[in-house]
Image 1 (cartoon, rainbow, N blue to C red):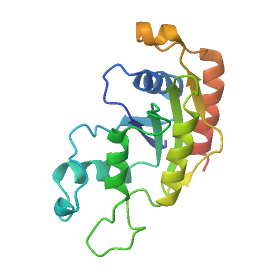
Image 2 (cartoon, rainbow, N blue to C red; image 1 turned 180 degrees about the vertical axis):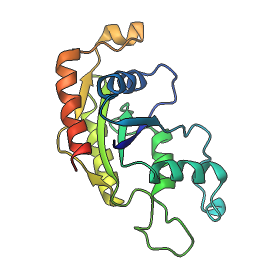
Image 3 (tube, helix red, strand yellow; image 1 turned 180 degrees about the horizontal axis):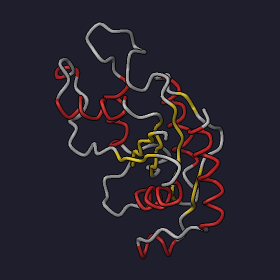
Length: 182
């Protein structure tokens, strides 16, 4: 069974994207081994502390390395990704040891896909920017289609993600197939 690491780009405990990740997990639980990356305690990227890497960085790198694929669930902040997620990707994209080549990082060749829950854009802007960044650091796009849920005003009032579960199940299955069969 493939190991898929879920990376939620929001720190908020009940964020829409965390809810989407939990829903996705329930839809695919019998086809993949899912775990979540907790990166809430990593320091800001700083070359002064890069080598040797802090313990928390070593821990998240190890978790990424031991997974077969990464599945990002992220909100869209100002048509881009949250700084919280960008900081993680900056750490993961850095060479594993001093004087290593740029591509000697945990993201090199790693399969990924993206799901988003966002406002009117459905997360299309963050997906575009995240794909650009991940392919730059040599991660491997598993599919060219992604899940994007457009949140309505009610969702922002109630804090509850509402999704067409049947339609979402079809989309999630397609993304899972791309990760598992690649």
